[in-house]
Image (cartoon, rainbow, N blue to C red; front, top):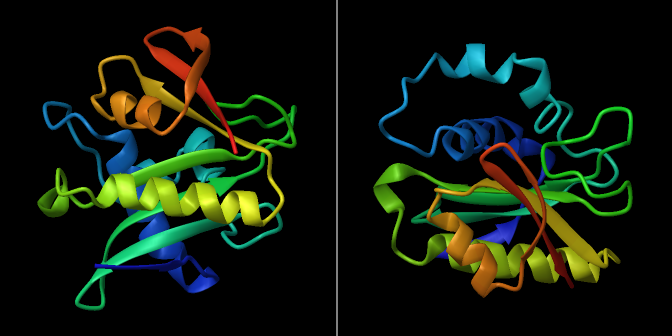
Length: 159
């Protein structure tokens, strides 16, 4: 496995990974990916990927992308689900279903945290459903609960 920085050329894959991140529960119905990506509250996570405040990493196996961890800053006027403040980017992460539970998510998370720190960010936030097992991955990486909305936690890790 190779982990490399995400670029503007990864925008479509990041959209696909956003879909996987949000539809993590295999029991949930799945709308078309295009319908999902066009939803205004989700569009803000991938639209115009590569702008200032965007960063991330891509995991590849044999040159094929299999996962992504990326972050983006938001504003008070258009916050993300895990918004903390305008200086703290919100993290999203996903691995294609075939390659889950192989340590790829953990490697992506660690690499993304290092990259964000190297870019001058002091923390990352995220939103995770309480029942999503990925919550434990985030906690092991140093994320702590700082808020709760419905059945989701907002978590924060200092870098």
